[in-house]
Length: 309
Image 1: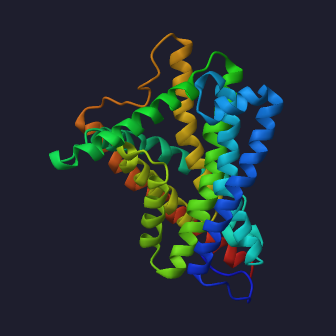
Image 2: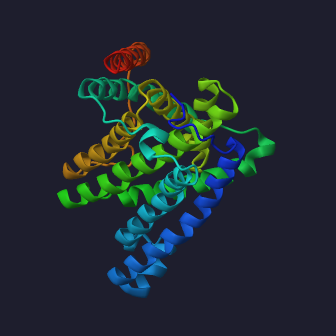
């Protein structure tokens, strides 16, 4: 999958990683400024101060800065890396148009792995540190609680317009930006260092999970990142991973919206209470569907190659 489309050799993967870090630093600054300008025209200086301080009374301004951060920190470095390497995005990251039947398989797969991810979240939430590390655990809990409050504020929706905005902010933007950087750029670069796809997939998934700084959600996010990574590696097109990422985030947004429209609590919308065999069924279906996606992708590639000769 990770093959050059031209004869020009790429820079070393270590230099590529350095480029990504530099571009991320510069991208955050540039797009933060762009976000601040937009917030200024929307709410003035008060809006800028409040959004920067995560004042949830200015949640719409906060969402603007959040989107700007995603674009600057994640999408910009991935795009600029292809520019530095003088490669077209299509060949560099695999932007081939997705096939409908394979999208459907990925959609079914995304539904089937949700119980497993929910169980992983439950286990992770119960994580406890030994007594001599309690101060670290308390710090992690404080960060987790702050992140949870912010997420709950973002997910508060009163109408269909709020739902559409949240789908853009929470589902569409992260799906595109994060997949381009973590699966497209990071996973691809690590693969060039250590030409083992499993190592590249799991290391990039670990980075993907760690960078969210939500320690009691590290495990499910690690598993999700690996799942997206395998989908990308097998299909050869990043759009399938973007689609799976979008479905995962959009599900949480839509469930929260549904609960609020029916005057129910949405703070634990992603919790699942299944009997043990429900999780076993989820795991079995997930592994079976991974095999289907891999075989279907392989068959489609072989057909394409044969049609070109």
